[in-house]
Length: 183
Image (cartoon, rainbow, N blue to C red; front, side, top):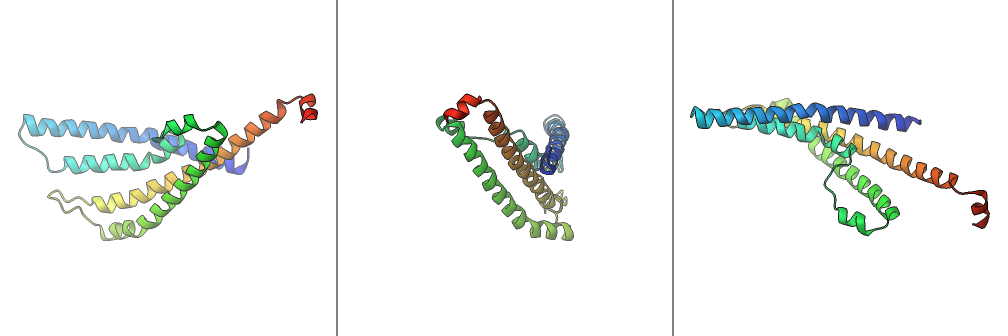
């Protein structure tokens, strides 16, 4: 196993760990939302903090699990195109889409870096009646999540080339000497 393969496999494990760990965040959102419903409609005492807290937790889970979704290849896809084009064309389209995503996520990181650092250093607050420091938390977490996403995209590029090499090797070893002479 090459060095890049080991790095890609390590990133796969990190993405899977974060993906499973973030499941707890979504469960917490369910619990907090149910709590708010009970407080609002049973006790007629809505909270000021639940909505923003749930939004922050959902955003954290969504951003941090992008690497997991990418590693599992579970993004929304137009499967009709996959069915219409030949398999070898689809494989090339997958590689192109990985490079487009790498460019887009790299641009996102570049664009979000400065606002994230400014919000973090100035301890920017939301401005609501609860007024938590959500921008100071969410803007940097977007950069962290995008960084994890970018690393997983790079790992997927490594896997793409490994898969093509495996296909090439298995195709070459399945031909008999007579078939090679016929070519």
